[in-house]
Amino acid sequence: MQLAILSDIHEDLSRLRRVLKKIDQKGCDLTVCLGDISGFSEPFYRYRKSRNASACLELVRRKCDIIIPGNHDLHAAGKIPEPSTSVKDERWDHHKDLDPGFSEEEIAFLSALPSFRILPGHGKGILLSHYASPNISGIVKGFYTRGSEFASHFRFMQEKGCALGFTGHAHARGFYTVGLQGVRHYSYRRLLLKDFPLIIGIPPVTRHKYRTGFCIFDTNSSLLQVFKQY
Image (cartoon, rainbow, N blue to C red; front, side, top):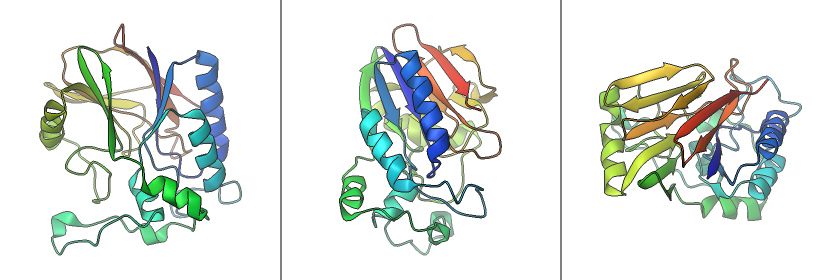
């Protein structure tokens, strides 16, 4: 099965259209969105005039077979819990997001989405999530950079019977893998996956610091292809 995976659109309708067109050309069997369809913040992005959260969500709903919500989507849906007093539990300041203008039906749709999904494949399962446990929806501020920080996610994968996990959220330039050898960063390229279990961090769709891209994974051959979208 050819599995197309994209993430972190952030209301960038132009880039989303390009990525989905490329995926259509590749003839994939299943398309997955790992969240942050919404979440436009002016300090980070430069396409205010062309941003369109509702149009992005409509495209994702029409083109993607599986949709996982990201932290910005949960904020838009009013599902982010109140922060604790712990410094370690500091949340992103989602109030900097411009109003995505979602309808009540769109908010209800986002609110009902599951925080992760599991696909059969590669002997065990493939875990699909916005980010990594215990911060699986990316609500807590910060990113993991060391292999040891992904230990909780590996335990979560083991509990769910998964040997492979895909995450977004971190806006990787190219992509990264997390395995027994720690974290490894790669440019946009092909890579034959082995030495499971593995976690794969994919690039964002949004035009953010030249990091735009998506990936296709062949569940039969374990070949991962990560494409840069200009």
